[in-house]
Image (cartoon, rainbow, N blue to C red; front, side):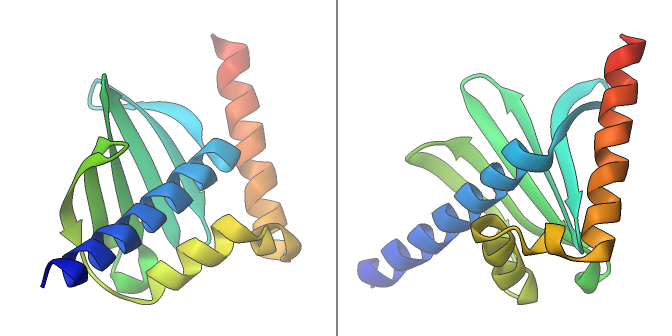
Length: 127
């Protein structure tokens, strides 16, 4: 039984790492309800991370699932807790996007990337 749980934790950790990688590439700082976060919208996925030292909570929403939360992981490094996890197509999309930049090879992806970049640049100029 513990081997199964270890495999599930490994899968969750791989998805966490993929989400963090996409946030590092495409995320921008925001404030929502007084809380600072980094967020990215990539294709059908919306990913955000809230940081309150020393932990980081990763949230993933998927438009293909009525925009609902499909994964929430609280914690950091080896010390993390899977709060919410709903299996689905989003898992594969998240992994593919993190491993390749297929997103940027599509007209929709290029357009969305430019919009995110412009919004980020605009918010930095206002500060």
